Amino acid sequence: MVFSHRLSYRIPFCSAKQARIAQGSLQPDPTLKPSELQAVYTVDDNVLTITFDGVSERVIRVAANNTIENLKTVIECLEEFEIKSC
Image (cartoon, rainbow, N blue to C red):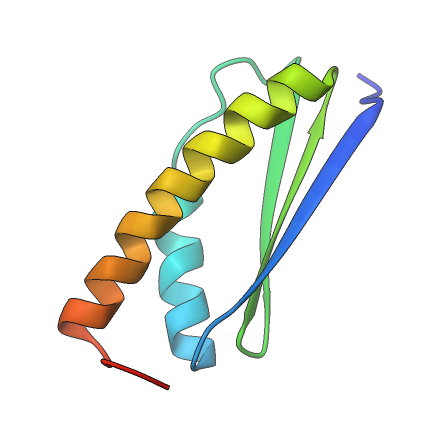
């Protein structure tokens, strides 16, 4: 399937370890309609990059909003259990 729309987020963390924890926490969530959306999570040093490819802007928007909510929870957990600040 050829996806006609793309959105990428680059989220810096305090450390590569935190970026990998976030990746590992977010990546297992399966895409409900893989024929409409693909999400790729990569880590380069301390930066988590999330790239969404989808069939429409709406599909990407819904997935991106959901991912941001999940990312917020991951960051709150990192702050609580890992490191309070950079």
